[in-house]
Structure formats: structure tokens, C-alpha cells
Amino acid sequence: MKDFSGLATGIGSLPHKDADSALDLIFKYVPEIPFWPQLPKRDHREGMVQQFSEHMPFLRLKGSDVAYLTKGIPEGELETFYERIIEADTDYFQISEDYSKGIRAFIQRLEKADLSKISFLKCNITGPFTFAASFKDEKGVSLLHDAVFLQACLKGLAMKAIWQIKLLRRFAKKLIVFIDEPYLGCFGSAYTPLNRPEVIAGLSEMASDIKAGDVLLGVHCCGNTDWSIFTDTPGIDIINFDAYGYLDKVVLYADNLKGFLKRGGILCWGVAPTDAFDGSQTPEMLVAKISEGINILAKKGIDRDLLSENLLISPACGLGSLDLEKAEGILRLLSETSFLLRKIS
Image (cartoon, rainbow, N blue to C red; front, side, top):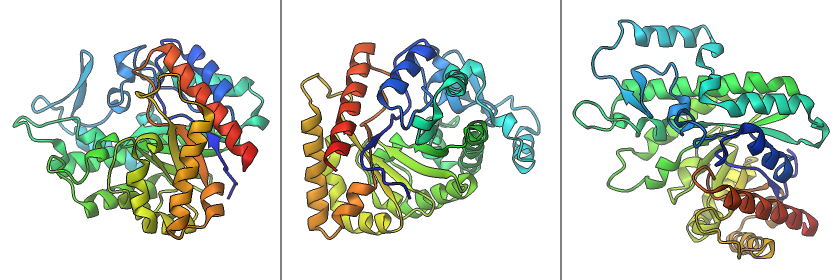
């Protein structure tokens, strides 16, 4: 396993309307783990749910939102969906250019780039629980309760990840795929109709479908949650958490994190604040935050070298809702923090 020691990457979304301008920032500030940008301000079809909705059963784009069909569903739609999965027809599950300018622009940029400077390529999907939680049936009940729809989300979104993997494999770089699950920041509350075994089983199934030898699978959750659902899910290689806002909560799971790291797991510290960013934060402040977390976890019995060597950094969350100046400031801060971390490691 590569010694990560503070390499930086992004979460996914940026506030640009032009893909090339977004990629200019990505290759400038996170050149070792670049990612394709989601651009929700360019087009509503690049929203977190909309972008992954094509060819998902019972869903149709209605204006700027995706609607769940309760009537008028074409006969055999679900059967066709699973036939495509059985046939491993990844092109059927592609994210078309109308729904992502960033992916195609990323490919074009990589074709011209000096690939020797790149350690990993990162891509992402919206997680199945966040995706399913975005819809309700005709009675107003969350589709997280609908076993048929949730299973379709697990399989369809995995196929969209596999399509990305096939697209990027030509560059002969190790790949990182993030499953973005902000909804699981509500896990454990009275408002979240999920239990722990159900989440672990779902993520395990998705990991099994996606994983290949050159792929690291990560999960991003920008709120507080029961972090053991990720440490205990087979196939999850990277856990991305908001280290700026929730470090005190994450360190409570030291025993779980210890086992995760010993199995080869990697922690991606979302140490660069997003909403809280005001320009006053410095690389030294963020390195101190990481050092604080490492010191706490080391006192709880986790090997300090294991923590330091299996450490990535990122913004706390996506940047798509911010303005351009703030987004660049956060990525610049992230880059400077990564440089400082690697200098002192």
C-alpha cells in the first residue's frame, strides 16, 4: 500500500459553470489525486441526485428535479433494468454529457496531462441511501422503506461506478471511487428509518459489485454518524469524515478505527472547512488539528505511524454551493496543508 502521508483530493462538486475552469483548479491544487468535477451551477442535471438518475427505474427528470413515478410506468421497465445489469451493459448506465460535462472534460485533460505526476484518479457516485432518501411514494413514505427500489439503487449506482472505472482504466492509474452518503449523517436519529445491519449489508453488497484490484473504495459522510458502520463494512478502504467540525466525535470510535487501519484502511481527513471557511484558517492550524486527532487516537492505542502513513486530506464537503473565490481559497488552503504535512512527516 502506498504511503499517503497527507496527499490531498476533493469531494466532487465545484461552483463553476465551465468544466475546463474547474479542472484548472483541480490540477493546480490537487494534482496527485485529481477528480472529475460535478457542476450543479452549470446545469440542474448535475445535482447530486439528478446526475445519477438516468436509466434508474421509475425515475424521470421533471423540470429541475427528479420525480418518482407512481403511475404511467412503462411495462417491463424494471425487467429491462436488471437485464442490462445481468448483461454487464455498463454503457447503458453511463452518465451522459448532458448530465456531466466534467467527466468528458476530465478525460480530455488526462489525455494531454503528464500522468507521471498523478498517483490516483478519483471518481464518485451518490450513495444508495442518500439517493433513495431523496424520494417518497404516493403516500409520502420515504423510498428507503421500499426494498425493491433500494435494491435497484444499490445495483444501478454500482453500475454507474463500474462505467467510470472502465472509462478511467485506460490511463493505467490506481483508482479511488467515493460513495457520497451525506444522508447517513442522520443515522441513529429517530428520523432515519435504517438499522445498522441494513446499512452494512447494503454497502457491503455495493462494495462487492464495484471492487477490483486497482480500485480503492471510499465513503464520504460530512456529518456525524455511527462511524462503525463504515469501519465494519467489508470492502471499504477509505473513510472520509469532517475533521474540522466533528473530530471530537470520530475519535470516540478509536477501537473500530484501530481494526480498520490494521486491515489496510485509510482515513481521509476533511480538514479544510467549507461553510466555516473565512480566509483566516492557515495550513498550520489545520496541521495542528490533524496532530490533535492523531495524538488522541495514539493515546487510545492506535499506532502513530499507521495513522500518519494512511492519511489523506480533503475539504470537509463538496464546494458546489459556494462562490468561486471561496472555493479556490479552500482548495489553496488544502494544497498548502498537504505540502506542510508531507514536509514534516
